[in-house]
Image (tube, rainbow, N blue to C red; front, side, top):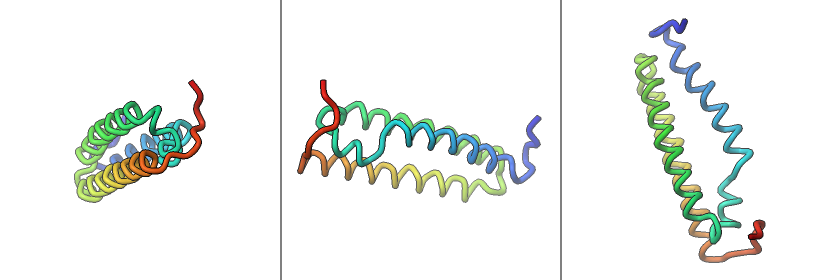
Length: 107
């Protein structure tokens, strides 16, 4: 049983879920891969980035509720992660569209 409000529950929850998401994301795509293949995968890539941000909002909210003492840093860290991911992926998309190189995917 979770010890709600113990001061560590929210942090443990975010860290555990975050590690799982990071491992999955790392093995699936990156801004570099997005830039290289943006002409073929741009729409679906950004759709999944934005769906991931929606899931992140839910995760951060639950963690902040679970650990109210650390709610501000939890929300701030989540917001920083979402904004920086958006900037990285939008920059990758823009770079890939402006100066496409050889793609790594064949259809």
